[in-house]
Amino acid sequence: MRVEIHGSELAAVTAAAALAWVGHRVHWVPHAGMPWASLVRADWLVREPQLLARLEEGRQQGALTIAGDDDRDAGTIDVLWLALSPEQRGDADTLVVAALGERTRPLLLVNNSTFPVGETERLGRLGAPVHAVALVDTLEEGRAWESFTRPGRWLLGRDDDWPEAQVRELLRAFNRRRDAFQCMPRRAAELTKLATIGMLATRISYMNEIAGLADTLGVDVEYVRQGMGADSRIGYEYLYPGCGFGGPNFSRDLMRLADVQEASGRHSALLEQVLDINEQKKETLFRKLWTHFHGRLEGRTVAIWGAAFKPGSARIDHAPVLTLLEALWAQGVSVRVHDPVATPSLHAAVGNHPRLVLLDDDPYLACEGADALMLVTEWKHYWNPDWERLSSLLNERLLLDGRNIYDPRHVADHGLIYRGIGRRADPGEQRSRR
Image (cartoon, rainbow, N blue to C red; front, side):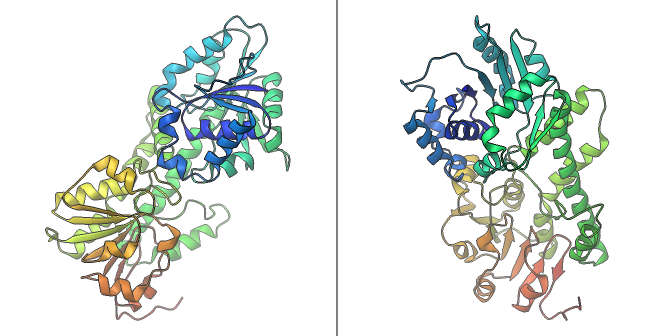
């Protein structure tokens, strides 16, 4: 098929590379706000496994052209694929009308963007012969290529049979192991995407509330988490307390759900609480630091391990580290941040600050001269540090674990004071029986 893809989102990049890889004739037009010349240098794309290599492979083989390439196949397209950000929604109408032109053949419009519920249906009414479907973006940042080429499912919103058949053909190469398609009406698919994000966020925020209660009652929340997860009605997924979630898509989609609720006249007190809890949790490590030092923080130095909103990403959109930095600086605290890939993004966001040092090589350098260490992003190489070395570097031997990745008693046995999310241990305490 001849496919024209618009957008600079991860979904657009991945679709362009993957569809060309399996033989479709793809022309990709990055959004004017992030043209190819800028996009190719973006940290999040450079760090995404396989994507850049697959894009280059597609161009060399002639299956993929990018806006500005001289060798574009100018034939009439079969598929218009939109993977735009919510802020670029206004461009969608123009793109659909331009693709229609004076064509008489049916045009398959694949809306892979996160737009308001009902937007796919509206785009399909802009002219004939457009057949619009909503293909929900389920990519996981950090493994986008694998998510697209070996999908757990395709969530497809369609209101008649012809466009479903066309999408199945378009994605046939990625649907061989089993039928991964879950089909439903367009509005239902759009709402399902937002409702799923809302449920995941609610689970995280609820677990964070329980962790706060566990702190108050002197209970190790890990026992509670495992007890809850063992119940088949609940399960373990997204049941980990932490210092807040972020990310460009998760946070944005959650706000989109809130907007949909408000636009429908149905204010959601639950969703409002979920958002509030998450913002409060981004400060939880700061509050633990404040409590430990009885509010006397001015002049202290804190090390932070991890700035990215999640491991495997170079992005810091809505990441807890941003909230932490503001709170720490307001109290006169100097901060030394280590992250293997996200320090350029952090520097771009906060600039040069007199109380900030950014490091991306040796994480122990961040701890030199620091009073405490905050673990914010659970990169795998943070999981098993040299405890003796860490204990010798931290002046006050305080470890604040924002992701509960360490065993509290093991940490305390090495002379460190451990404070996690609903977990704690001090040196010299007796190990409790499990």
